Image 1 (cartoon, one colour):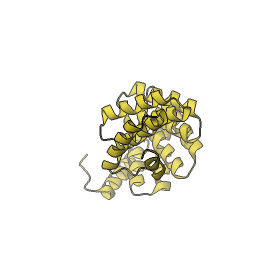
Image 2 (image 1 turned 90 degrees about the vertical axis):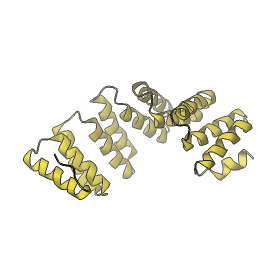
Image 3 (image 1 turned 45 degrees about the vertical axis):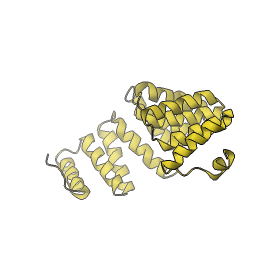
Image 4 (image 1 turned 90 degrees about the horizontal axis):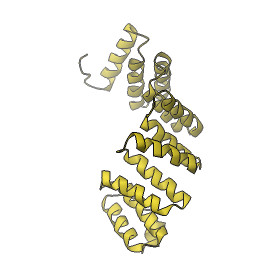
Length: 203
C-alpha cells in the first residue's frame, strides 16, 4: 500500500481497506487511532470497538479504548479495558503499566505495585513504569525502593525530568537535603515545573 501524504489521506485509505474487507480488525484499529489524532473521539471509539469485535486479541485496541474512557473521566472503565488487554495477550507490558497507573490514581497502591512490577518484568526499558512504581513506593513509605526505581528510570534516560523531581521528593523524605537539591536543580534545568512547596522544603 502506498504511503499517505497526511492524516486525511490515511483515514481515506483505511476506510477504503475496510470497505473491501470489513472484518479486518487492524484496519478498524488504524482508522480508530487516526480519528483519535483528529480528536474525533466518538467515531474513534466506534472503530476501536469494531476492531476488537473482528480481532478479540488486539490488545492495543483495548488500551486505546481505555485511553478514551480515561478522557471521559471513567477510571474504572479504563481499568477494565486494560485488564482485557493483558488477558488476551500474555506479557503485554503497556497494559500492565496502565493498570498500575490507574490503580495508583484510585488509591489501590498494592495492586498498582503488583501490576507495575509485571510491566517491568515484561519490558525492562519501560521508563514510565519505573517512575509510576517509584511514586507507588513513596506513597507506601518505602523510600529506599522509591529511590531505587527512580534511579532505574534515570539509568534508562538521564534527562527524564519527572524522575529527577520524584527522586528529590524521596531523598527529602529520607532527610538527605543535599541529594534532593541536586536532583531538583536538574529537574529545573530540564524545564520541569517543580511544585513551590517542594522548592520551599529543600531551601
